[in-house]
Amino acid sequence: MESIPTDLGQRHGTPWTDHHIFFYFWRLFDTHPECKDAFLVFRDIDDLETLRNSRELRAHSLSIMSFIEKTVARIDQDELLFELILDLGKKHYQYNVLPKYYQASLAEFIQAVQPVLKEHWSSDLEEAWKVNRFAQ
Ligand code: HEM
Image (cartoon, rainbow, N blue to C red; front, side, top):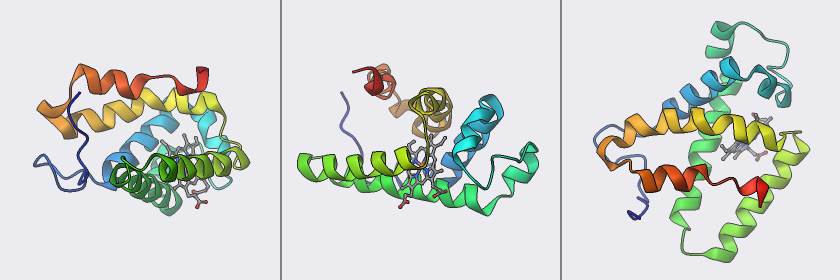
Protein backbone atom coordinates (compact mmCIF):
# COMPACT_ATOMS: atom_id res chain seq x y z
CA MET A 1 0.00 0.00 0.00
CA GLU A 2 1.19 3.55 -0.69
CA SER A 3 2.78 5.11 2.38
CA ILE A 4 0.56 7.46 4.33
CA PRO A 5 1.47 11.13 3.90
CA THR A 6 2.27 12.87 7.18
CA ASP A 7 1.64 16.34 5.84
CA LEU A 8 -1.93 15.87 4.72
CA GLY A 9 -2.53 19.61 4.97
CA GLN A 10 -0.21 20.57 2.13
CA ARG A 11 0.24 17.68 -0.26
CA HIS A 12 -1.20 16.82 -3.62
CA GLY A 13 -1.78 20.33 -4.97
CA THR A 14 -5.22 20.75 -3.54
CA PRO A 15 -4.88 21.51 0.14
CA TRP A 16 -6.57 19.01 2.42
CA THR A 17 -8.31 21.27 4.86
CA ASP A 18 -11.03 21.29 7.46
CA HIS A 19 -13.26 22.47 4.62
CA HIS A 20 -13.35 18.92 3.24
CA ILE A 21 -14.20 17.48 6.62
CA PHE A 22 -16.86 20.11 7.01
CA PHE A 23 -18.34 19.07 3.67
CA TYR A 24 -18.34 15.45 4.86
CA PHE A 25 -20.19 16.16 8.06
CA TRP A 26 -22.63 18.50 6.44
CA ARG A 27 -23.54 15.80 3.89
CA LEU A 28 -23.68 13.19 6.63
CA PHE A 29 -26.38 15.18 8.39
CA ASP A 30 -28.28 15.33 5.12
CA THR A 31 -28.12 11.58 4.38
CA HIS A 32 -28.25 10.40 8.02
CA PRO A 33 -30.02 13.04 10.11
CA GLU A 34 -30.00 10.69 13.13
CA CYS A 35 -26.25 11.39 13.47
CA LYS A 36 -27.16 14.88 14.64
CA ASP A 37 -28.56 13.39 17.84
CA ALA A 38 -25.06 13.13 19.34
CA PHE A 39 -24.65 16.90 19.08
CA LEU A 40 -26.69 18.79 21.67
CA VAL A 41 -26.46 21.94 19.57
CA PHE A 42 -27.67 20.37 16.30
CA ARG A 43 -30.16 17.76 17.26
CA ASP A 44 -33.19 20.04 16.83
CA ILE A 45 -31.99 21.81 13.70
CA ASP A 46 -33.52 20.44 10.49
CA ASP A 47 -32.46 23.18 8.13
CA LEU A 48 -29.23 22.29 6.32
CA GLU A 49 -28.45 25.92 5.58
CA THR A 50 -28.49 26.73 9.29
CA LEU A 51 -26.15 23.80 9.86
CA ARG A 52 -23.91 24.99 7.06
CA ASN A 53 -23.37 28.25 8.98
CA SER A 54 -22.87 26.56 12.32
CA ARG A 55 -19.73 27.50 14.21
CA GLU A 56 -19.94 24.25 16.19
CA LEU A 57 -19.98 22.13 13.04
CA ARG A 58 -16.92 23.97 11.79
CA ALA A 59 -15.26 23.45 15.19
CA HIS A 60 -15.83 19.68 15.05
CA SER A 61 -14.42 19.60 11.52
CA LEU A 62 -11.28 21.27 12.82
CA SER A 63 -11.14 18.76 15.70
CA ILE A 64 -11.32 15.84 13.26
CA MET A 65 -8.74 17.39 10.99
CA SER A 66 -6.23 17.99 13.76
CA PHE A 67 -6.86 14.53 15.22
CA ILE A 68 -6.16 12.87 11.86
CA GLU A 69 -2.94 14.86 11.49
CA LYS A 70 -1.94 13.97 15.04
CA THR A 71 -2.47 10.25 14.48
CA VAL A 72 -0.72 10.18 11.11
CA ALA A 73 2.28 11.98 12.62
CA ARG A 74 2.44 9.18 15.24
CA ILE A 75 1.75 6.33 12.86
CA ASP A 76 4.87 4.42 14.00
CA GLN A 77 4.22 4.85 17.72
CA ASP A 78 1.77 2.06 18.35
CA GLU A 79 1.27 2.51 22.09
CA LEU A 80 0.78 6.25 21.93
CA LEU A 81 -1.55 5.89 18.99
CA PHE A 82 -3.59 3.29 20.83
CA GLU A 83 -3.92 5.59 23.86
CA LEU A 84 -4.96 8.56 21.72
CA ILE A 85 -7.59 6.59 19.85
CA LEU A 86 -8.89 4.85 22.95
CA ASP A 87 -9.25 8.18 24.71
CA LEU A 88 -11.13 9.70 21.77
CA GLY A 89 -13.33 6.60 21.56
CA LYS A 90 -14.21 6.91 25.25
CA LYS A 91 -15.11 10.56 24.79
CA HIS A 92 -17.35 9.74 21.83
CA TYR A 93 -19.00 6.99 23.84
CA GLN A 94 -19.81 9.62 26.45
CA TYR A 95 -21.13 11.93 23.73
CA ASN A 96 -23.49 9.07 22.75
CA VAL A 97 -21.95 8.58 19.31
CA LEU A 98 -23.23 5.15 18.37
CA PRO A 99 -21.13 2.69 16.30
CA LYS A 100 -23.72 2.89 13.50
CA TYR A 101 -22.99 6.62 13.17
CA TYR A 102 -19.40 5.82 12.15
CA GLN A 103 -20.67 3.25 9.70
CA ALA A 104 -22.99 5.82 8.19
CA SER A 105 -20.25 8.42 8.02
CA LEU A 106 -17.77 6.25 6.14
CA ALA A 107 -19.19 6.72 2.65
CA GLU A 108 -19.44 10.48 3.15
CA PHE A 109 -15.88 10.62 4.45
CA ILE A 110 -14.58 8.81 1.38
CA GLN A 111 -16.59 11.15 -0.85
CA ALA A 112 -14.87 14.10 0.79
CA VAL A 113 -11.33 12.70 0.75
CA GLN A 114 -11.22 11.04 -2.66
CA PRO A 115 -11.35 14.23 -4.79
CA VAL A 116 -8.56 15.77 -2.72
CA LEU A 117 -6.14 12.87 -3.14
CA LYS A 118 -7.02 12.54 -6.85
CA GLU A 119 -4.58 10.13 -8.54
CA HIS A 120 -3.10 9.23 -5.15
CA TRP A 121 -6.37 7.56 -4.25
CA SER A 122 -6.18 3.81 -4.73
CA SER A 123 -8.36 0.76 -4.20
CA ASP A 124 -6.00 -0.31 -1.38
CA LEU A 125 -6.54 2.99 0.35
CA GLU A 126 -10.28 2.72 -0.09
CA GLU A 127 -10.31 -0.79 1.34
CA ALA A 128 -8.22 0.35 4.32
CA TRP A 129 -10.78 3.05 5.14
CA LYS A 130 -13.63 0.62 4.66
CA VAL A 131 -12.47 -1.94 7.22
CA ASN A 132 -15.28 -2.31 9.71
CA ARG A 133 -13.39 -2.11 12.98
CA PHE A 134 -16.59 -2.13 14.99
CA ALA A 135 -17.45 -5.62 13.84
CA GLN A 136 -14.14 -7.09 15.01
C1 HEM B 1 -14.43 10.51 11.87
C2 HEM B 1 -13.91 10.35 13.03
C3 HEM B 1 -14.04 11.37 14.14
C4 HEM B 1 -13.02 12.03 14.73
C5 HEM B 1 -11.54 11.87 14.41
C6 HEM B 1 -13.59 12.93 15.73
C7 HEM B 1 -12.85 13.78 16.53
C8 HEM B 1 -13.35 14.54 17.56
C9 HEM B 1 -12.56 15.32 18.46
C10 HEM B 1 -11.01 15.44 18.43
C11 HEM B 1 -13.41 15.91 19.34
C12 HEM B 1 -13.05 16.81 20.52
C13 HEM B 1 -12.90 15.85 21.69
C14 HEM B 1 -12.77 16.50 23.03
O1 HEM B 1 -11.63 16.93 23.38
O2 HEM B 1 -13.76 16.55 23.77
C15 HEM B 1 -14.76 15.49 18.99
C16 HEM B 1 -15.90 15.86 19.66
C17 HEM B 1 -17.17 15.41 19.34
N1 HEM B 1 -17.50 14.54 18.33
FE1 HEM B 1 -16.24 13.66 17.02
N2 HEM B 1 -14.95 12.79 15.72
C18 HEM B 1 -15.28 11.85 14.77
C19 HEM B 1 -16.54 11.41 14.43
C20 HEM B 1 -17.69 11.80 15.05
C21 HEM B 1 -19.01 11.36 14.67
C22 HEM B 1 -19.32 10.38 13.52
C23 HEM B 1 -19.89 11.99 15.52
C24 HEM B 1 -21.39 11.93 15.57
C25 HEM B 1 -22.14 11.57 14.58
C26 HEM B 1 -19.10 12.81 16.44
C27 HEM B 1 -19.59 13.58 17.47
C28 HEM B 1 -18.87 14.35 18.34
C29 HEM B 1 -19.43 15.15 19.42
C30 HEM B 1 -20.93 15.23 19.77
C31 HEM B 1 -18.39 15.82 20.04
C32 HEM B 1 -18.47 16.79 21.24
C33 HEM B 1 -18.96 18.13 20.80
C34 HEM B 1 -18.00 18.81 19.86
O3 HEM B 1 -16.77 18.85 20.10
O4 HEM B 1 -18.47 19.34 18.82
N3 HEM B 1 -17.78 12.68 16.11
N4 HEM B 1 -14.69 14.65 17.90
